[in-house]
Length: 291
Image (cartoon, rainbow, N blue to C red; front, side):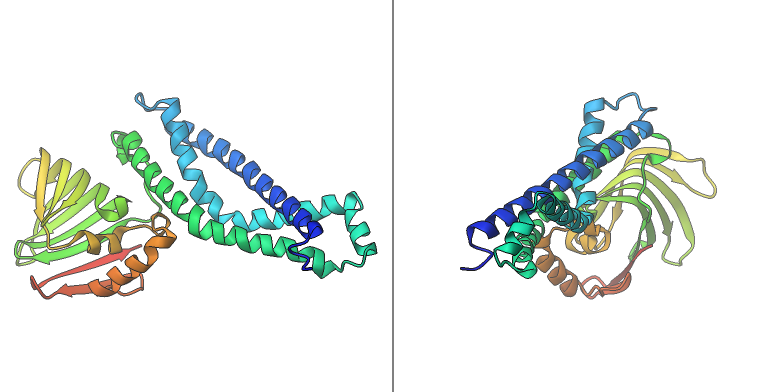
């Protein structure tokens, strides 16, 4: 009978899974506490930030962070499991019964493969959805803070040219895989590529054929700044094209990868960090950069 399926093999596999899950849970609690303390520090000056909302934001952020540490959880779990078995002389008894080292390691190896499959197919989509939800909650928490609140380490840039001229859009944060952007600065030029105006906005949402900016302040060279609740900017971009430009990797789950790749190829995007595309239907050109 195979070591993986017999009673002793199932016992070793069970002990390994319990140890790995225990390490995972311990690191999860530690990361939640550390992230919560950091979020409390950042939201200490916000009147409308409740402790429950901050705690939920930290709780939703941690699964994405912990996914990167999962191999170390398995490694530490294996070390803990076999150290405990050795201290209780269970490995000595197994060796005395004729079980080789490779045989009592094989249950843990098989269990690690199963855990890896589960993490890829089930845990990754869940963590991606929670990460997207945490980014929305962060935008709600810090949307009215000075400086626009928390910003990603890298910004998102979009350059579009149409009949109205050229517009260079910079977004500090991307949500809903690029359909909703926050912390925006837009530089507009006319058809002769002469500077027209600079626009700062709290957020923007992509609709059919246009960007809808809210919380807008417009700056020109010869006039005082003008505040507007809403501003519309014509665009030829589609949600699929914007998702390819602005979606962050952590918000794309394992099951969305085939459609994401297929959409990128059909939109003419390259897999490099810099790409340009020309839409033949409207004869307009747009480029995107992620720094």
